[in-house]
Image (tube, rainbow, N blue to C red; front, side, top):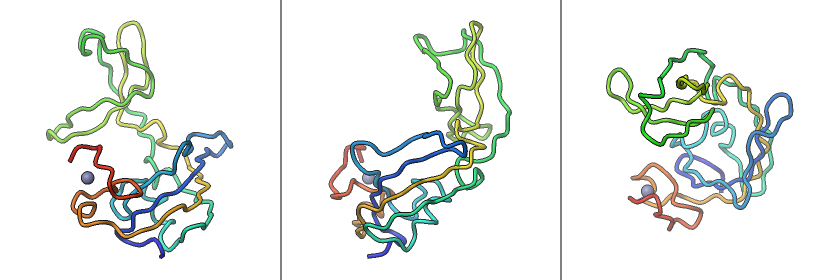
Length: 163
Ligand SMILES: [Zn+2]
């Protein structure tokens, strides 16, 4: 079957930056996602539509359709304000609340003796992405997966996420 809305898809990939540097890749097993749910970056999801098992493609995804453009905006947080025992490192994601109380993720962009600088810019924001993809599996989503809005592993029985 072809990948369409509510397909559960697994695929192997190698993600590279414009300079050829490998950013990420599937290693032990393929990545599995629910098509149309926004589980993977928008620009890649759109290019996988209509593909079948065994198809290979190179999907170029501009930053705006990947992890967004870089705003370059950040703010400082002093050591005293960090949770006890926290060992921040550059690229570390932090759960936070936005101005309207909405959940959002901030990323550590700088670490110094005095504190850290955090930003809403994803570490891969501003980077044009290139995915070399091989489709490994395509099936229809189960009713549970449609309700939850995500895939439960390629066999449909992975409920390890706890709901
Ligand atoms: Zn679920």
